[in-house]
Length: 313
Image: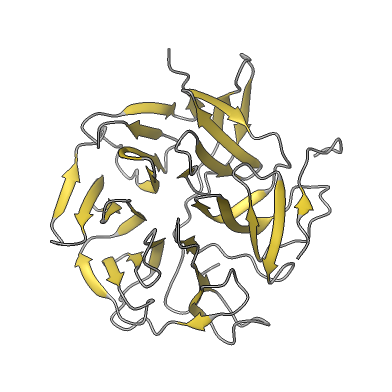
């Protein structure tokens, strides 16, 4: 299908279905410093987080476009400010669902689209103009796509978990055996197409057979998950307090990281690990904070504080 250019315009500006329910991961009123200027720009929601394939940039999709953190400075992507949902970085760009910016000639909703790192070209893959997927994840290097389908559509006959190994041309339905609770997070192994993780209000669940059968690994409410690039899973949980746990996929031993003290009720909304250096980890929270560690979680730097981007010295 033809790619659609997403250059800046001059014009002005689910529920996942069945027993699975998305926990809203939106955060409000965030301000970031644009590169090379003292003027700040705002956006209303965080819809994901991920590092580019070269490891140089952290990308955060918002309600009105992409924010990019590189060289310790925030900037806006210089492309159409689309509302990306179900955002998933891969080694050469990202997959996403969501909605086009006001005034765009792109169809609404996106269905599933693919783009380069910063959204300069949008390539519709499937269900373009038909479905907005909130629960979606992709294998960083394998490019397999998993979605939680909220209702029947022209490609998927029923609600549930589906996956595609050919960039959304064909789909298979997963059985979800042994999964318990309302889903809040989804993650896919970067290499192994069969390995998927789902977080629910009952815990963390791992599958090694494309989501047909799950095994529970943690028994506390999960709000965010991502596979690392060294056979581990980073899990954000929301019990009495928010925490980040690294689960070893071989031993299944969990290791809780020491993170900046969260406020009461604050939870981890998204987690990302740098593909070029697994010691570089970033996470966002429900209270407009984003933290990054460059030493595997031994120490953290706030790169967003209470809705304001922080430019390092």
